[in-house]
Length: 162
Image (cartoon, rainbow, N blue to C red):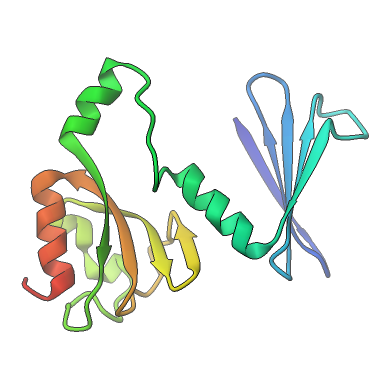
């Protein structure tokens, strides 16, 4: 899959996803938070096969679903093995944790615990695949992935029990 993005001055940002099956998905994120999704049968089509429009809240909920926060399907036995050994957990960051007010890079979470932060819920906002410069705040809910012992270490770190 190839993803292209372009700034749309005065509007927001446009993402084009060229899918392996020849279809194209175009996503326009407006400065207002509104999202438009266009599904094209072919990249050269002038008209989409269909469109979807989402407000900011609905787009974030759909994004959370697509991240796999609620459900992760089992595709084959390799995935089953991985799911038995790898956990995806939401962990609350408490105010007394040494991680508070540090960016992900400086917090050295992966070095200290082996776990990886793959998303952050900050109030109603969901930050998917957060950049290493995102500053962690007390009350953040960290979507993390790792082995059971790695997740336990991260939970202790987030509680301030390091």
